[in-house]
Image (cartoon, rainbow over all chains, first blue to last red; front, side):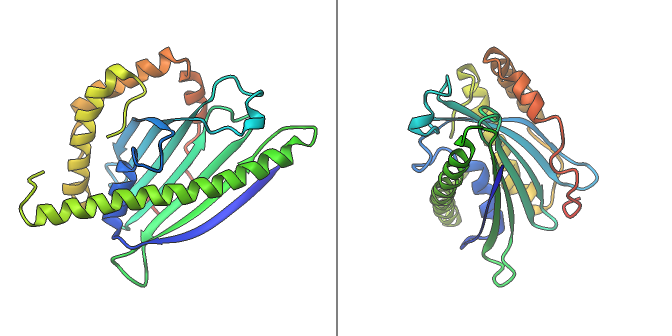
Length: 182
Length: 77
């Protein structure tokens, strides 16, 4: 069983800032469930100049109450893969859970590009897939939960990104006026 | 700045993140894609992979990273 989710959003910040905010987005006040973020692989392809990164993210408390009985540890490891091409100004990210994947696998793809109508803005396309393998009528419920949780989570993560983007803007303003040297 | 999965890696992570963020905004985005911060990254990464092993998630991680999810994406190549 598979369910899909699609969404397009515009950040009123340029592509450079949005991609930087992607690295800096944790911690933020809208992601208190994120415990740790680590880069486990990163390199620049010498032929294309594309930056390829793999990060491991640990989140806690992401389960529904009725699911608590089903899972031993209330923690979830997430893997985040990304590609950044500075020439074409394209960032593609894939985020998926690696724990509890038999119960429910959520895959989120995001593409960040310069807004064709305004070069100072950034367009983000999000596509997600929720797959679960439960029997006994639970599958429908788990996937329905997954989509709702995903939509809530996506709204929260946009708030988190906006918060970090605002911080970046303030820092750049200060630096521009010579208040900050880093 | 966020924490590391291995508490003993926090300092290395801090140092690496600071190096990367500077390189990313001042070099990479401006077209200079020559890598930097490699020495500190190696130390930080070794520490993290060790923590991953201690938490018994190394196999799950290996499994999840078996296939390159971007192998069919031509536009960024």
